[in-house]
Image (cartoon, one colour):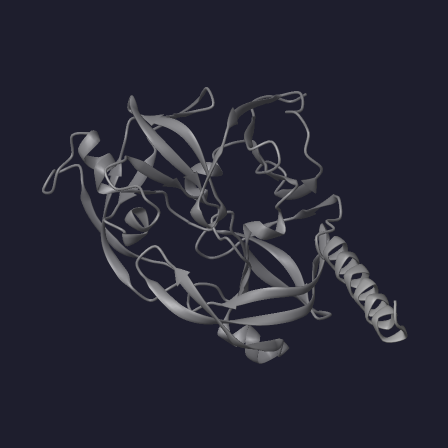
Length: 301
């Protein structure tokens, strides 16, 4: 081996070692718990620090694939802009073009991440500070205790005493889906803590024998998500929601012909996005990402 090739090999080895160390540290989550709050729209929030600045109130959004910053927060903390890299944000109502920024540190009491890619939210009204997405919890067990208002992040484990479990499936953009029933109709249930109200597609309404003009469908405020598009919607109080053996009387669901349902491949399939309005009726829930399992607290251990 020549001196030049040996030097190149040494540089490559050092580069690979540094890259491996960075990836290991970037993905390292800290165990523990921290309080979560509730914003004016009833959505869950938690404290996050960016590049040593904060704390900032981020929406806790298990329905978002990646964490995001509001335009106002980008102007305030001034993260690095990532040139030449665009993002296509699939909101509930439409999709929109956006950009990436890079935070040197992205931390909370339960995780620490370096050089975190963040999407700039196209709709400035969607979140005041930002969104904490599901990528921050990948490889861990996320527990939300609605009795104590605490978020816990820990290693994967079987359901603790007092919890029951049901399998989860992953759908595009890292959303977690469970099988459920609404008034006896089988339905795919997306777990989305970033949505303040539960949303059903029109296929679900039809499966429940509700068509356009049905008096049970009451006109409601349109649905607006991460993009600025608004989709007409109708509210309805239903009879019963059943999931993982737990039953909840009179769930209220907002029905809308959201483009998101078709974009995710749910054409012709009854689907409900379970928002925090219904999820918070539970004592506690955990999403165990490695086990692909929803764990619901039913009793004290």
